[in-house]
Length: 313
Image 1 (spheres, one colour):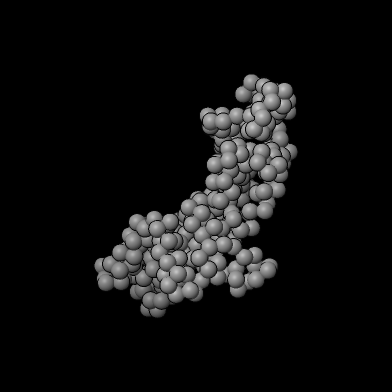
Image 2: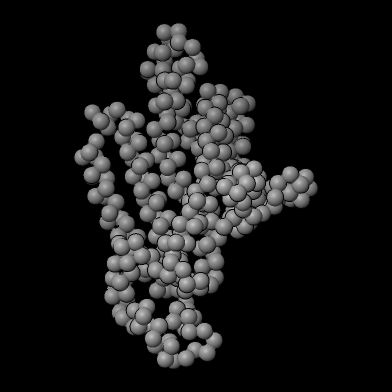
């Protein structure tokens, strides 16, 4: 286990380094001058020159990257040019909101996707299988922003059951928090549930055709026990990997959903930063979410190692 873990960590370190290079390089291609933006409307040449030196913009790009990477290694992701606040502080402020949204969306996806996949696999080529596949196709084909707008029109405008937008902290009002998060969580979980359903169905069909499942049935073991204990347990191996990776996607890919529902998470933060050319925030958020995605991939590999006895042999 220890050797496997060390090997996986050694493999992701070059990946994280390459991510930092790509993020910094792409930032250099974006239009705009940070020094001129900070100088204000007067554009005083002396102020611009001072800011260039302060931000190391007068140095060659590799030197700028060195300064930035050194700061990152010491926990300094820079400072927002727009609101003059450390990027790390902004990330810590928005992280609980995005984590809550991602966790609720993952819960929705698991509750819908895995049972639907099991039912579709057990009832292969029956009406339940066709219904599950149609629902999955609908989930994959429906744009998140369109579904979000429809839910707002139905549950907020027509029925008045839920708030159309905004966010309430669970520490202030738990009921209000759940009411504000249920629609965006369903929008994100809907698409992910379709993916989980298809993968669960495929994995279950493969496991249900194995010899040990046929042997369990021949011994007279109840079908429910065969499906849930013998088949599902072995089919969960690829689903664990998929779930971990998709959770990382939820953390970084909820931009449109957060914009539609005005959720103040990473998505809204990075969109506002792009429109305001706040490059330090863009770099910091992208680097953070990329690192989280890579770490979740590592955790998925470790979970795969623990679940699959053949890897430990």
